[in-house]
Length: 395
Image (cartoon, rainbow, N blue to C red; front, side, top):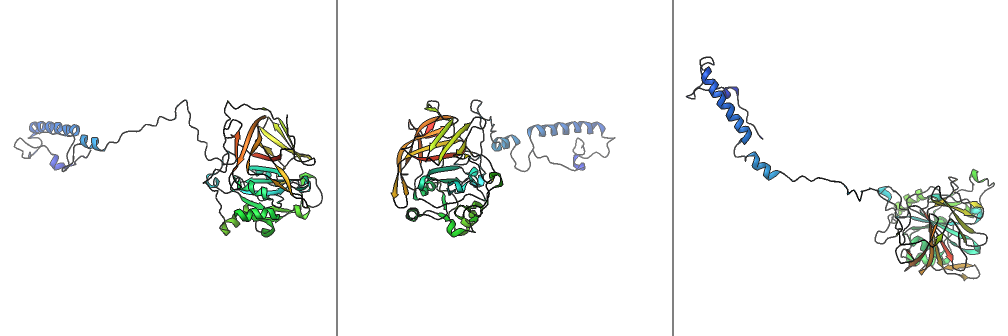
């Protein structure tokens, strides 16, 4: 409310005739009466409001300008609100907002025992394993929520490995290739980084073994090429290659709790996958950490840079067909498009699942046996692409 302030002379009490009193003593009685009237008048103005020019009374202004009060009563007690923050699309774990849409890298690694131990795989969000020539397996690590200065040793591409990158809209990273891989890369225009051409730019050489491994001597030349993901990010930016994931399709996984009506088909405290006699893969569930610790036939699968035993939350098995496409070189063909059965293991339990991939460039879809979309637990995932002719054991 506005209050008009007047000068002391104007506020001085007046006589009955409205003239000013010549002195306060001679006009005491009159001035007291007038002062009382002025006081009553001022109080009336305070209660009823005062005018300045043509302004509206306070009550009318208040009715026209007052806005309704909105009270935030908070979340319903039955449904408490929990702000989980941004989550990585391949692990369901917390991730910084600025990198949530970063395009992943799919790095090919040889699994020859002479290439062990591998570097950087402790940081992979997803790891694929599949047979290659001679009973060896190749690994493809999908790196998105974490990148590493050293991943490898990086090895040559196969055409079906390209599809693992396409499952996640990843940049395909390899060191050389065979002709079948290049046919698929060229046909689909796959974004890629080849260590054969980018050594010193996005790849480095290191022939040493970590001290903790106890391995003496030097790595063979073909096992000494490593991918540097952090340097590669700068190279990608300079070349104009797309550095963010395509949001038009869902290339990640769904995370949460498995519905109560989906029952496990057995226990999975230890899983043995015999890719070949010399290269089996074993996962043992560790109740203390809630992770499957990874083993090869020489023992614990440890990261060369950290010495950490690699642990995985979700284990998937994709049953698919394999056959030799090139007898002279022993090159395999692995079916990646279509549908088929599989297994899912988490927290010591096994579930029957199915997989489906409609084309080479589309993402892989996974389902529970009843047709519900697969739900993973937040964490890393190891996908074993396995021939139906072998015998997998769950104990």
